[in-house]
Length: 281
Length: 333
Image (cartoon, rainbow over all chains, first blue to last red):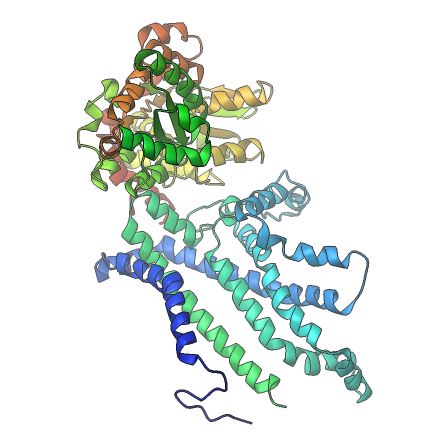
C-alpha cells in the first residue's frame, strides 16, 4: 500500500524538526564544510586552467584506472562476498566464528600494512608471485595489482551488508519454494536473489566508494607508472608535492562529483529494486 | 622565558612528565627521509655541546618524511624551528608559500647553507651481473632500473637531473638528445615508488631491478645493513652534487624564542664534530680536515652542480618537474 507522499508526512514519532536539525548540522560539520573547502580552493583556477588540469592525459588515464579497478573490485566482491555470506549463514562448520572474524580484517588493518603485505606476496619473488610469474601473470606493479588491493579492502562491505538480510530469510522460504516445485536454480534466482538485491547493491556501492578513494594500500602494489598504473588519489598527492594546491583540488573535485553521481545512481537503483521486489507483499 | 617554559612543559608533559622538569628548551627539526640516523647521532652530540656552553638542556625532536611533504607541513603550520630538507626548492617554498623565512635564506650559512653534501650512485647486485658501469649502461635493453618518482621524491629529482646532465655531456649539450636519453632510461623503469626508501625496499626486499639509483648515503646504509655479499656500489663517471640545505624557520623561532639555540644547532653542523658525524653517516663533509680523514670512504666523482648545468632549482623544477615539464613529456606522448 502506497503512502501519499507530502512535503512532510506526519509521523507518529515526535521531534522531527529537532532530529532533522541535528542531522543537517552534523552532516555539515563532518561532510559538507570540508568538501566545500575543496571546491572553493579549486575555484582559484580559471575555467580554462581547471579544464586543462582535469582533462590532462595523465589525469584521464588515472580516472579510468581508479574508477575501472574500483568497479571490478566491487563486482568481484559482490560475487564472492555473497558466497562468503551464504556460507557463513547457511552452514555450520568448525572454525566458522574464526572465518567470520577474518572477514573484518581488511577493515581493521592499516591500509599501508595491507599494501605492503600484498606487494610482498605478489611480487615476482613473493609466495604467490613466484608461481604466477612463469605463467606470464604479473600482479604486483601492474593495474592488476590495483584491482587486487581494491578487492581486498572492499570485501567486508558486501559480506556485512548481505549477511543480516540472509539471516532474516528463513530456510522455510526455500523449503516452500522446493515444495512448490522449484528446482535449486529457480529457488536461488527467483526467490532468494530478489530479496538480496538491495543489500547486495548497497554492499557493492560501499565497496566501490571505498575503493575509489583508496590510497594507502594501492601505492605500494601499483608501481605508480604514469598513464598505466597511476591512480587518481596518487595524482592528487603528486600535485600537492609540487605545491600545486589548486590543481590537486581540481582533480579532487572531479573525483567527488563523479563518485557522488555514481553513488546517486547506485542508490536510486537500490531504492528502485527494493520497491519493486522487496516490499510488494 | 617563563611563558616559554610553561608551554614547553605542557608539550613535554604529554610525552614524558619527568623530562619536563629538567628541560629548558626543545627544538623541532623537520627533515627528510634518509637523515634519520644522521640526526639521531647529531642531536645527542649537540645537546651535550649546548649544555656545556650555555647550561641549558635542549631536547631535539625529529620529524622525517618526503622532503616536499615536510616543506608543505611547515607551510601549513607545523612549528619547525629548523628545516633540514633534501633540496633548496623545498626550502624556497617556506618563503614562497609561507613567508616564514627571508628570500635570501640560502646565503645565511656557508656553502649554500648545505653543511654536508651527497651524490647519486648506483647500487647493483653482488658481482654486478649485468656489468653496469655508467649511465649509458642504464638505457640498454633488458636492464631494469629502479628510481622513485621525481614528482614526489626529492632524491629522484637529483637522479633525474644527474641522468640529464650525463645526456647533455654525451651529446654536446643537445637538450633534445638529453631528453631522448632520459626517456630511454625511464623506459627501463618498471616501478616508480613515491619515496627513496620505498625504492630501496623494491630493489632489495622485492628483488626487482638490476640497478637502484640512490643517494650515496642510502646506498652505503643498504650495503652496511645487507652486507657486501648482497649488493655493490657503482660510481658513475659523472654525477650531481646534491646539497641538502638547512635553515632556521624565522617565524617559528621568533615566536617560540628559540632563535639562539636553533641557529647554534645549525652552525654546529659545520664544526669538526658535526662534520665527523655527517661523514660517519655517509654524508660527504665540507670541512677539509674531516674530508681528508674520510677520503677513502668517498670515491672521487666528477660532480656537476645544479646551478651550473640547470641554472638553479627554480628553473630546473619548472623545466623538468612541473606539470607539462620534461618528465610529463616523456610519459605522455
